[in-house]
Length: 391
Image 1 (cartoon, rainbow, N blue to C red):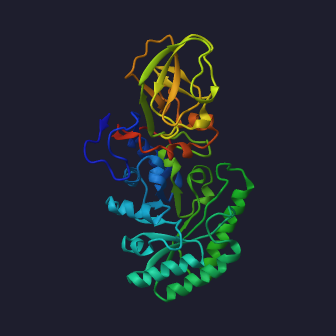
Image 2 (cartoon, rainbow, N blue to C red):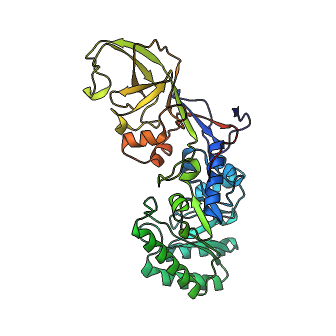
Image 3 (cartoon, one colour):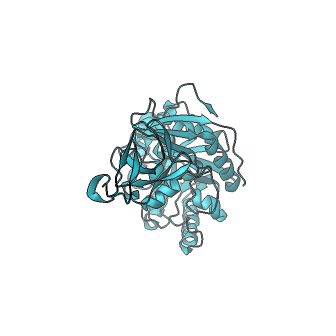
């Protein structure tokens, strides 16, 4: 396994581990997942690298995805887009979740396309285009049923008419129409069909207003894998790039391994309370190992009482409540010594717990785990040999 010895890509936190824990990002997993998703998409593939590439490093994930089948990039904020441009990533790039007073001038200068969910945003990006003397490329965003981002059905016709007027003024060019399904992780949910129908109607209304969007995109990761009739011209995938399938239908490759060293070992008698709150007492004489990783780093406190880590090839139960800076594991009679390394989570190929396990123990999503890794955790990026993925 080769480790990059050149400068760390922007977006990955540099420096040695402050907590002692180390996160390894395997870009070959991202590459393999991208190839699979591109084969499923059938058309264009947008790699969504928001939230620092789902905690994996935005620039590194972006470059890897573009080299393995993605044709465009997506982020939420303008600042995320500008960070990618600063890192030298020059691919087509869309930002779609911004306040009305976002740095749209900077976005246009950096050749960033913008999502527009309503009249106020349309006016703001058109004004930025006038100031910068650039024509802004926009993707009109329609709400197909989530009551979240995007223009409502009742607002959509007016937004299309206003966008067409802005096109005639020379400030705006509508290049896309976008939406988002809230139920694609349940492919048989009838709301998926309803959402698709609303999207088709929205595109027709845009064209009826005189707009000529060349890119229609509705499907995210789950729909890319399970709902081919939602793919249209482009699929937007984010979680799938890093090995998360919300639909639970496809074997993807997790890209993260979190390891933490043992910093202390003690022998305790039966009945010893461990950690805060008297939530756990040892049922027998045993030995306890302390690991320097807690909820300030990535370990969800809600996983207390359920989680385990792998140490010396064996499962070691996390005992007591997860603390801000540490967890304690029961090592029984094993002669574990400080400096030995435990695997907190990994791909699972060697029996170690996975991010999916931690999400289940905490009653949350894998997305929350991977995007919640704190700045104290050291990072390294590796590019091992390509992984085989069956499409």
